Image 1 (cartoon, rainbow, N blue to C red):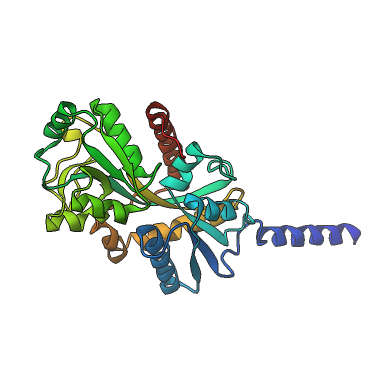
Image 2 (cartoon, rainbow, N blue to C red; image 1 turned 180 degrees about the vertical axis):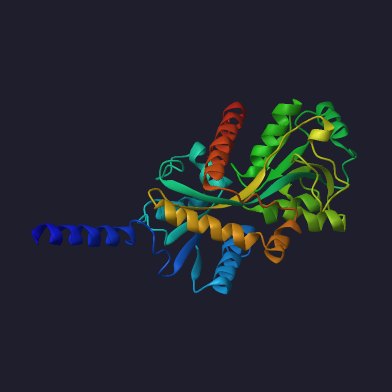
Length: 322
């Protein structure tokens, strides 16, 4: 009798563990929160809101999105890195908070050790644009112009350490030119000064540069991607012009390290499903973005590769945060 009771108890405990929050088998059974380390309105904010809408359509799942700015994404990322690893608090990570900022300054989290990749959702290439008054019509002419007047040309960036800054320094190193960096506090003021002719050029993300390019406020020189983007089919890549520099912005979902594998798998599967739908995917591809999606492992490798690449450029260019 005693042995029977022990056997029954063992089976009961095993069943409880299999469906406990630690195992993630009953996930999700309450609202999922996603922190966005940026102000409302950008791609990194739209992505989780659209995902939440798709999850609500497909089942009784609630996703709550909150914006928490500060520290170039470090504040929100730290909150998630230190949260219980149960899948109910996630971060919308990006190249700045995961692969650039930790290389430039001390942050209270390790993006590799403290966070678990879920899925790479969107990548948006940078595009090199110039003010219409610049006589160069292609990359070769622009490089020749820069070499003829060292230090005279200038490029705007969204901030020190932003993807546009890294792209600008990578271009300077690749082309061997001296171009003055002019950092701004955000993409909008940088683009505004470029359109006004206060700076010569800028590496902006395609989604933000589309309007100014089509209106004639700026002229596109080349896209920093492997292939041309469908929304600007006549603009060649930098690689086609002899400088295969590929860089841009990207956004992906991450959970605290130690989150159960079934939870990561559920989030990955449902996100893949949501953004495989044409209406959801089309919102981003229409802006020149790509949606890699894929596995958590692929996203983890992507972050590691991007970090290694940014680290090399930052060291060679001597980029520092003041």
